[in-house]
Length: 145
Image 1 (tube, rainbow, N blue to C red):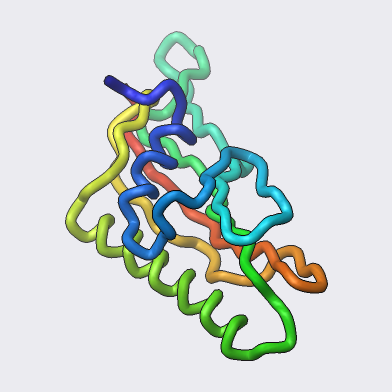
Image 2 (cartoon, rainbow, N blue to C red; image 1 turned 120 degrees about the vertical axis):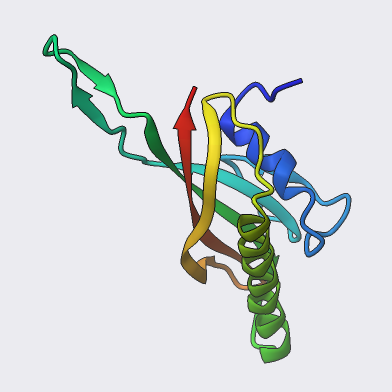
């Protein structure tokens, strides 16, 4: 059965990543204050159009979607802990790149995925006294159905 939304399909696909902790919460467009949990955020994406012979604007066959994969992790003065957080994201990024290389993609309701690539490296986007939100950005290129 196909997923009800693009973000749901992407979440299901990400759950296959061995770097993620089994049983950890995995939310959509929301990340709570407690480490460790994950979230996918939709991010603004341009919809490409072209004009057909009748002068109508119609969507291009190839489109892109942007998403942010984030996690809330323990954070503080301990360099080992912070380095482990960045190493986790290096493992996630490597997994995404491996999936792209073998063409193992989620089944999007909008179309057939052609590639998923990280477009921003990991960084702490929000920092608290004992936890931080780290994130990477991803670009999905797909062919509309």
